[in-house]
Image (tube, rainbow over all chains, first blue to last red; front, side, top):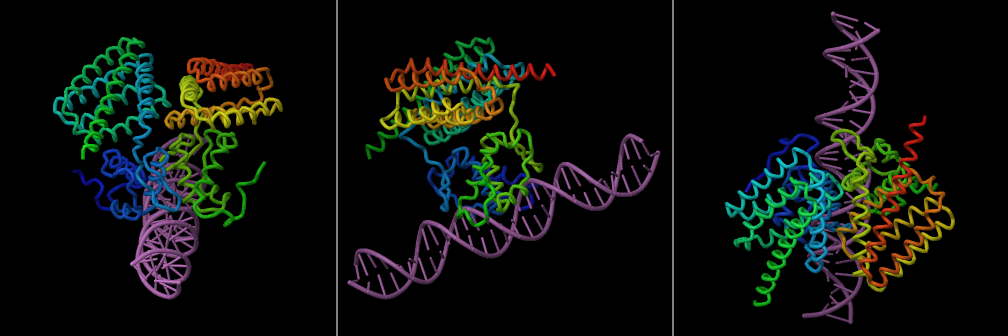
Length: 234
Length: 234
DNA sequence: TGTATTTTTTTTGTCGACATAAATTCCGTG
DNA sequence: CACGGAATTTATGTCGACAAAAAAAATACA
């Protein structure tokens, strides 16, 4: 547990305050260290990070613009809820972004891109080998983010990163359920996607991305269903 | 020219400050009243809107998160540039969003949605009849925004609105070129799209949206090409 | 005259404080 | 004991001021 959030004042340089708060809050939100729906007290946060409320508020505005927190006027801002009732919109959008970014990566990737993508894939494979569920979540995100970067479309990339983050939050909810055979299969699917991108085979890349997305979506659905059954059984 | 931005202090109620600044700046940016690349002086803005720099800065952070301004650390924030070199990424993304939102609207629209969509279409038709280019841009945006709302997917909707706004900026650049027969055709295409949505004919809606997007993209391309030729001829 | 260096000015990032709107507590009345 | 309204407390929205960084101006030197 790194206590990066509790260092002495004046240890950070000027101008990095907002970015720092943004990173801390963002990580805590995506790791579910801050529970969805829980209120964020500006004063308390200001004390914890040893800075004034001004940079805190600016970071909160930024997080609100990205949908990670919700600001109620004249009332506390709260960590964004996970909308289980409308998860299908999430699945629909992230599936499309998986496909589009992988397609475009096959079309537009440049020499250096594959090096980065393969590096991310190596990190993901390492996490799977180590059975480190949290590392799997993080490295899987970076792998697909690298593909999105190679797709060279900032609009798709922006939406996809947002969706991947939201997915990170979802997976974090159920990460204990990762002790099955699926991760190893993801490694293989990733390898196939890299090959398709390298060969600039757009249709194959699309097909693989589509299947990969379906895998992940159905895995999350299973985890939720399993979770629901437990709840009903109580 | 409404001078909404120059009213007396204390005439606005508490809590609406940031929203107000955001709306003013956003409109001025999208209408090209603020030129792309031009710097935004916080102090000057604070004086013009008769408020302190704090709400100004929070509005700027929000605009930065949406890509409408760019903040250089410890340096002035500037109005986002129009990236003519990468317009194809814009065209690609907005075409896909036209299709996806229209498809999903055909699938998921609910009783009230068509009423709203038809109302927007009526406003657009009125603008075309009046040969009011600026109103055409605005009402066309609202028409497609209404379809996106009926599609009931906030992820697609968010990206699409961003793209429509960026398109508004582009069209505003060339709005004088609107004196041709195309707007009338857009009215007809809109009508067809409404019919397809009402009939829940997903594939037809997709096809119409796709063609509609192609129309608009090629029109913008033509305007830019025409503009370029003039520049070269000088 | 041109370039390097110091000084001044401008502008941003942050702070502490105050005013106002909700939330909470307290109290009186039925 | 419950209910409604007033008083208190808490937290947000905004402000003016200061400090640090960059830009601009002024000066020194070749």
